Structures are given as structure tokens and as C-alpha cells.
Length: 142
Length: 246
Image (cartoon, each protein chain N blue to C red):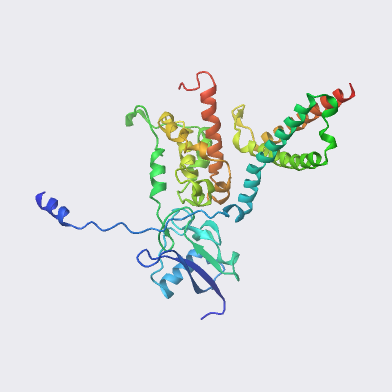
């Protein structure tokens, strides 16, 4: 025991080998198609937020009277809205598609297939869109 | 020298001499359509440059040792066929997101620490005596976790995960998949011991669902699914009444 302790004390501890620290390159999201699509998906939140801010400004103008609320007459707002709509559709598509991976439940002790979950999500989305469109058109005619 | 050859460009890094990794090219005979990248590396090691360092063991996609970046994609080199790359060169690099020890060998300590932290074994509140018999499971109970038990700890998912690349405190895909494998096992009673690790800031909530971990997994484990479903389950435990009771 004593001999072992003495040996340990006099043995030089070898220095830890030097490692090369890997660093993520700034352009990592351009190196793979999936990374790029993921980055676009995450980025879509930003134009959506900007569009909502712009809409809030337009709604505030409506406080000065109906004539002041005219976002549809602004070409910039219309163009920006179309671009944001594309982002929103892409975000919705990815969100609903991924639902098949996230949601998991059983019916009659059998797991519901992911494809069926995704289909039901898109069906619910389509139904909700029809209801919202109907309400908007209905009030526009009133 | 046979007519048909393939160029293998491999990362070289000698920690005692090099400041950073460099690439070195080798011409390897491509004699057989069934040759894989690992065969090419073994040819280099045996016939051209014995100093090339890399990990490998089983050569049949089971041990998970030979994971490397092949033309920028994390792959088991024993399962990456040269015919899919020839006549272009094959670029072999160490797995992304990990420190490099030498050449193609990465430091896997961080992963091993994370793997241990989720206690990837069956935890019982009280062990039954052997005489009480085996823990019986139905096929449906096995199906609940079977997919996640296929993980071979090859770490390709960590190399594919940009979240781990940007923040290596993240628990990561394989560790979460294995935690879910045991949490779903009807014999296991260790959920409450794993939840603190899974639920901390650098656990499942760090994942933003890139999904590339599942794309590169050579065993079809789908770690992204394990992470998202664990997020949902832990949320339901928090939201639902009596959710935290067992």
C-alpha cells in the first residue's frame, strides 16, 4: 500500500492531449437543404410579426375615422401582405406536417397513424379557413 | 496498380504538431463494388499511411464506432459505399460538433456524460426477487418503445444537430431518445428520476425541431420524434390534473 502511494506521488501526470475545438461556421444553414428550409421556417415569424405591427398602425388610424383606414390602397402594404401570406402558408404547412410526428395517441389500443393525424390537421385548417372566409365575406356585405 | 481508383481525402490532425486540421489525399484501389468508405480507410492504414487514426470495430452497422462525416454528411463509414461517390473524391472528416483528438477521432466524453445522466437502464422502485419470475410484456407494450431501443450510440445525430453545434450544453437527440425508450418501457419506474434532466433548460426545450437527427440516423430511430413527444408528455403532466401522480 505504502509502495503504491509513493509510486503515485512520484509519477509525473502526463498532460492532457490538446484537442482541436470544433466551431460552428457562420454559414452552417447554407450547407444543407434541410438546414436552409428549417432556417426559413424559423425566420417566417419575423415578417409575420412586422405585418401585425403594420396592421396595428392601420387599425389605430381607423380611430380617426373610417376614411383614414385604407391599408388596401397602399401598394406597399398589399405587396408586403402577399409576401407575408406566402411565409404564413409555408409556416402553417410545416407546422401541420410536423404534427404527425409530435401527436401520438391510441384508438382502441392501436396507435393512430401519423399520416391520418396530418390529414386531420389539414382538414381542420381548411374547415377553419372556410368559416373565417365566410364570416369576413358576410360582414363585408352587411 | 488496378485501373480503377478513388481519391480519399481525409482529415489529419496531430495535436503535438498541428495548430488546426488539414486534409490529405490518398489514391485507393476501387476493386470491388461492395467496398465501403471504411474499407478505403483500412487500405490507407495498411498500405499507404499507417499513422492515420480512426475508430472502427464491427464493420456491420452495429457497434456505432465508425461514424464520420462523408462528403459533409454524418455516416457510418461501414455503411457508405464507394460506388455512391466514385468517380468523385470521397472527403472523410471527423464528426462535426465534437472536439478532435487526432485525425478522424473525436472526443466523445460529452456524449458519454449526457448518456449516463438520463440513466439508460431499467429503474425499479423495488427489485423483485428472481423467484418472482420475469417481468412480462405484451407485444403492444414492446412496440411502444422498440424503435427507440435501436439506438447504437453512434453520435451521427449529434453531428447533424445544429442546436448542439451552437450550444453543446444541449442534452441532444440520442440521449433523449434513450430516455424515452426507458420511460415508455412498462417495466421501468424511473420517469421521475429522468424528468429533471429532460426538463431543464438545456434538455428537450432547447430543441427547435430541425429534424436532421432523424434523417441521418442509420437505425431509423427518429430522435426528433422522441424529443417532441417528450415535450408534449411533460406538458400534459404539468397541465392535466393529477398529471404528476403515478
